[in-house]
Amino acid sequence: MNLTINQALQDKIEQQYQRSSDFALTKEQIREIIARRVAKEFKDGDVVTLGIGLPTAAADYVPEEKHVIFQSENGLLGIGKSQSGANPDPHIINAGGGLVEVQEGACFFDSATALTMMRGGHIDATVLGALQVDEEGSIASWMIPGKLIPGMGGSMDLVVGAKRVIVAMEHTSKGEKKILKKCTLPLTAYREVDLIITERCVFEVTPDGLILTEVNPHFTIDDIKASVTADFKVSENVKLMEI
Amino acid sequence: MKKIVSAKEAISQIKDGATIMVGGFLSCGTPDKLIDELVAQNVQKLTMISNDTSIPTADKGKLIVNKQVKKVITTHIGTNPETGRQMTAGELDVELVPMGTLVERIRAKGTGMGGILTPTGVGTILEEHKETINVDGKKFIFERPIGADFALIYGSKVDKYGNVTFHGTTRNMNTIMATAADTVIIQADELVDSINPDDVVIPGLFIDYIVINSGENE
Image 1 (cartoon, helix red, strand yellow):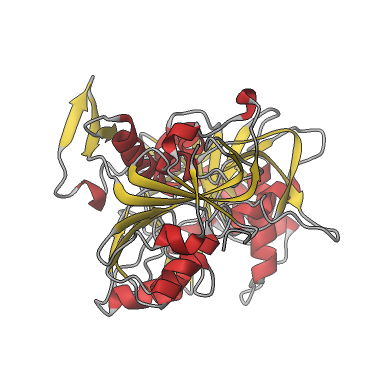
Image 2 (cartoon, each protein chain N blue to C red):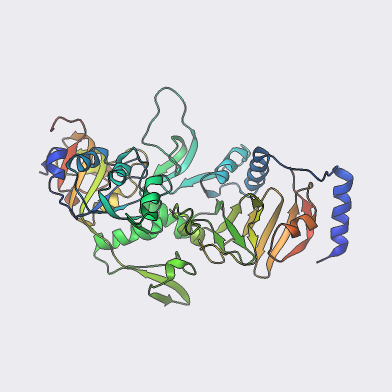
């Protein structure tokens, strides 16, 4: 770890922000910071599959000039905004069951084709929430034995097949650490994650382990260290997250 | 010409202990009238293969709530708390399968293949007790074909030859399930004389019985 860079970043933080010891983000702020940051990962022309919940919010922050096509495991390429109006069409839904419109150029297909896109390497990026993620890039997101077993749906296929796997999640869960040396919950996939985005920081997953590339200016690198069990290196180009 | 029957007639063929496949993603493209009839006839000890178990008050969810299912093979049960409750209480056997694996296992049955090799689940608990095969240096899990006695599927329009078209996101597993059961019953919103061959999604040969949702055959 390069201490000089740490100190420089720390000084910058101190100059720009008045940090207070009781600083806390609301759920809404957390959601927005993550969704905004995730949206920056999409390139013009990308086909992207978003997980249910927080990841779905990223679609709202894609700038209009960037054309991103959203795919859904229930058989839709070109998801539009939520349906509104007097005559909703119950036969067009997204993977969360919400009624949606379709974009120009959209198409419908069956589950076999949807999963061919996902498992077969035809999706540019996927964004998923997680219960845990570890320094090897493994992800756990589908069950807590004895407590919560919703099932994996199409997530296991997606994580194995998508060209880029982005985990977008709250940094901790009720104080529990989620970025670990090794996941303790049953895995969704082994070593498939490329990027981890939380409200506090961004980690790239590399063959050499995690690299911290961005930090929320309200937090220090020591805060990040204290809130994960994973080992990580700090990038030479570490930046402040735009929030 | 296919047999156009009432939901009651179609479902009366299904006996206790049968294995059924049910199409639909949540309630979209789900043959709800056929399921209502399964509930009405109170067919018991079913094994159900479906994408999900819907919500407790709708279609597939009603079968769970009414305790007509002894085993469900599915991808996601998070939308139906009753499925989870019965599973935890040991009343219902739940086999969770990744969506892509489930659909390809069904397709394997329909297409006469001996199984599939999938990278999905490698390095996870899904690999336990399964045969793995190395192909060109990459590890795959071997999964067996899966079929059913009956497939209950949905279509938007069907013609008297059994050809089916779809509107919106209603295709989901319906197209694949149509190929993998001994008897295939379709619930369609509309019966037409014929469908333009360019537009047919499920070829009529896969369909055995047609139930029209208008209720005119009841």
